[in-house]
View 1: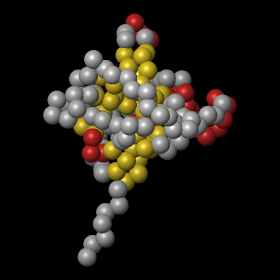
View 2 (view 1 turned 90 degrees about the vertical axis):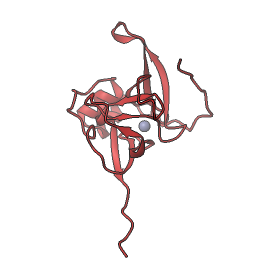
View 3 (view 1 turned 90 degrees about the horizontal axis):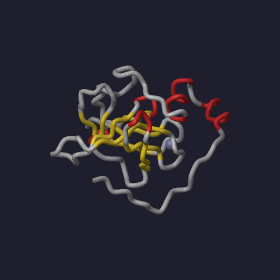
View 4 (view 1 turned 45 degrees about the vertical axis):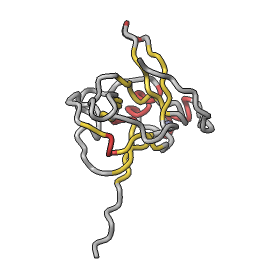
Length: 146
Ligand SMILES: [Zn+2]
């Protein structure tokens, strides 16, 4: 059972498709604006173990933390929870004769991937299956050595 929450929304960032086309690479545009899916193991980050925060490639909204990332073996970056409660929104997706839950950026509505209820039980039980193409990463700074 997936619950849908309607939280008070952040102000949306809206651009036309032409505007997005100018600032995104063709691959980023296809995934985030045309609901594309990157080829398995093709995107960045699926095996990254660096510490830091994953942001939306379109608007830099913080989406996921490396702490919640796990190796799902699927070839896409997978997370057990979102960075904060305003990171994403969920929508039903009826494409490909399946009912799935689509995950979009709460600020700019970029398509990010889907969430499935088969994540690690010791975490949240959720698996956010995300296209690496829709993410940018900011690495956590190491504390300065004494
Ligand atoms: Zn965004």
